[in-house]
Image (cartoon, rainbow over all chains, first blue to last red; front, side, top):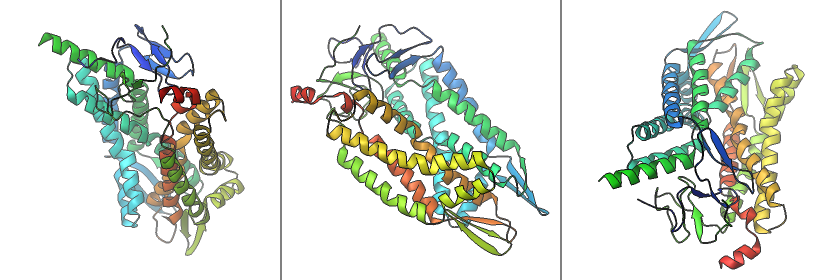
Length: 215
Length: 204
């Protein structure tokens, strides 16, 4: 097993904001530990975190998939109707030669959350099933990186602002995809809330140690 | 139990493992370990400057052009806010003003202050610097909302001569500016606020 620095229990961690060495000891489920010096949340051990992450990330993935299939929004003004699906948002921008904007939105709105949720769900599933390997850390690093760049909820706020902007000029009808995208955002935030780097890392390390002992 | 911070230990940002500072990458997950010396100020300064340069076209050039019944109007970010205010959409005007004007300016100031704080220690109290850092990290992404508004409106409103919206060059400049300020904020190291000059002397 890869152990922490010599003579330190694996429940020790350095606050990532102020670098204070803290021993969390046995952090009880449902409790969170804060840094005694800077107040930063060191770890939040939520109840059944892995199961919840698995459930929320799968739900979010299903809603994201559904949100690309149906009409997202319908607009009618002066006898002209316009339907738009979520993928069309990107393809219309491509057609307008706004490649960078289209690519950026495609990545941030669909691609990045998709990769993030898939990796997170897989990691939570393997931990819950009691399996770990080198791939677990690869997934954890991937999740850590993608988490920073997720902007799905900001895109959603952008849609709401855009709709208020055009509400006076045209009749706006929300399609099924809009509601699926809203639900996707809800589930995405719920799964993000349950992600705790330290608990995931500790979980992987302890599983690896158990596997090593059994072998 | 609480022990004083040790200079020969580093914590992994990905998996939390505490290990000897001699490692270049985490012994357990393989992620790069960041030495305590305190962020990369060169990198932070260059990203900050790039963002500042992009701030000029982002505000001077039109963020979108609207073609309505044959006539085309161009709107800048501030012009758009003023227009919304005139149309009594105070809430939306407020959101856009805060996200697109106030927050970017505050972020430029905050990143500069934090970088100076890392360079000249003791300029801000560690607790105050950490609070500013947390705020900067939190609001960073939310400035992007205006880019999404423009992108979504342009995709949605394509009704020929009746009304069409096309994104302007400022949309890209603004998006780039937000990305670069986010990267600049990431290259700061909050641990440096808590490291006093005496600590660094001991470590050396």
